Amino acid sequence: MYVLESLNQAPPHDRHISDSTRVDVLNRDGHACRKCHWKYTDAHAGDPRKLLELHHLDHHATGGTNDTVNLITLCNVHHDELHAKHMDKAAALAWVA
Ligand SMILES: [Zn+2]
Ligand SMILES: [Zn+2]
Image 1 (spheres, helix red, strand yellow):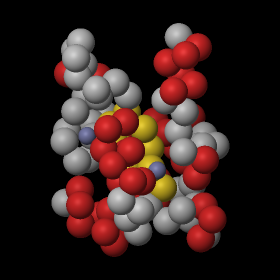
Image 2 (tube, rainbow, N blue to C red):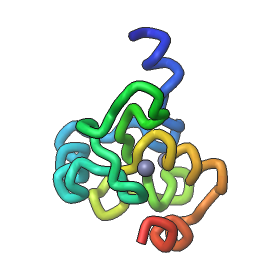
Image 3 (tube, rainbow, N blue to C red):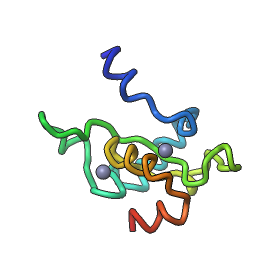
Image 4 (cartoon, helix red, strand yellow):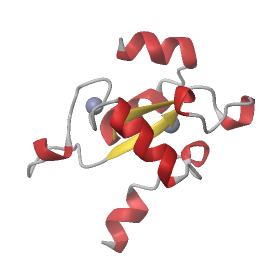
């Protein structure tokens, strides 16, 4: 568990979200990735999708808040992809639409 958790550490700007906010965002998004609709109940061996994570649309560094409207639910694969592509808020929203 220790190794898994450290490998799946959320990017720095997505840390420090309160449990109540996390629950609100997950409930709003139906506990599914906004890009591929993956859920924990879909997990199976060989699928790289293992976790649901919350992403800040406006990054903390540029004034983003921990409000639910600034957060979206993504699986670990699509969260990594979004960060790899350095999407801003508009690009991210278009990408999950
Ligand atoms: Zn996904
Ligand atoms: Zn993120």
